[in-house]
Length: 399
Image (cartoon, rainbow, N blue to C red; front, side, top):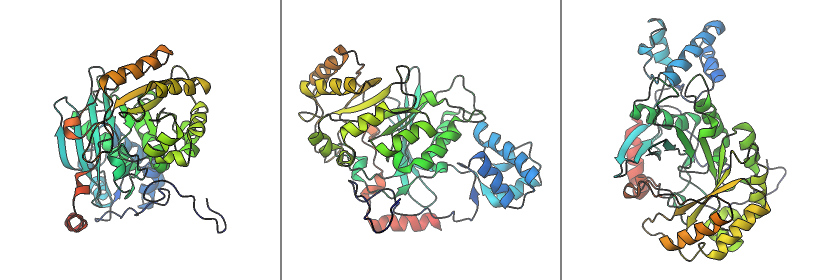
C-alpha cells in the first residue's frame, strides 16, 4: 500500500495491473449472481434478501449442492426447495454461465471457447484431452499487462480482472460441455486445471484464490489441489501467499536464464530478477520431490536455446536446491511474432543436457495450433475489431 506522496512502483506492460482499468459493471437485470460466492457469502446473500438466518443457512447448503454437485442453473429444477421458494429465488438471484461466442475443436481434439461476460468482455479457455487425463486451461484476466514478447496474449491490453464467478464459470461450462454432472471423482474427463490462460493469476490473487477454493471444496467440484497448477511469470511478493492460502502446484514462466534475455522476453524480470524469483521458488510452501515446481521454458531460435543456456539452467536449479522439472515448449507462432521456434534437433540437445543432470525436461507436444489454442496463442478475436465495433457490440448486449 502506498503511503504519503511516494510514487507508485512502475511495472513493465501497458500500466500497473494492481489498480484495475475498469470496474465490473453490475448485472443489467439487477439480480445477484450466486456463482463464485463462498458458502458464507451465499448464506449472507440470502439473509440480506430478508431470509431468516436459520432458513438462509439451510437454503445455502441446498443451493451449494445443486450448483456445484449437480450443475443446475434453474431454480425450478431444485426438487428439495419448495415451489413457493423457487420463484422468490428466481426474482433475486441467477446462477450464471459465461456466454459462448464461439467454440472450436482442433484436429487433435483440443477445444477452445471464446467467452463473453455480462458486461461484454471477451476471454478464452481451452480443454486439452489426453489418454489418461483432461486439462482445462483457465483464464484469470481479460487481456494481460505483462507484455511477454513471445506471447500473443501479452500483446493485448488489460481490461479488467475476472471475478471468482467468471473463473469458476469456466470450469462449470467445461463440465456442462463434457456432460460431467452430477459431480463424481471417478471417470471424469476433466481431471486437471491449469491457471495458464489469459492474464497473470497473481495479479488477480483474491479472485483466483476464492475461485480455486470453490473448485477444491469436497462438497462440490472436489478437485484435489494436487491436480491444479497455478502459473506465474514471477510476481515474487505474491508467491508465498499463494502457497499458503491456495496450496496448489506452482509453475513458473522462466523462459531465460540470463538477465538480458529475460528482461527482453519477460519484462517483469526488470522488477523481480531471476535470483529473487528462484529464491521465492525455494521458499514456496509445500514444494518437495513429490510436488516439484515446474519451470516453463519456451524454445526460441538463437535466443535462449543454446547449450550454455541449458547448462546455466541446470546450475541455477541446483544452486537453489529446487525440486524441479522443466517443460520445454516449442514456440507457437502467431502473426507478427518477433521470434522463430528452435529446431527439433536444438530442442533435443537442450533437453538432453538437462536430463543428463538428473532433471526431467520433457518437450511439450503443441496442441490446438490450428485453432490458435496452443501455449502463448490465446488472444480474443475481439482484439481485431475497432473500438467503434466493440462499443456497438457492447450496446447491443446490454440492451
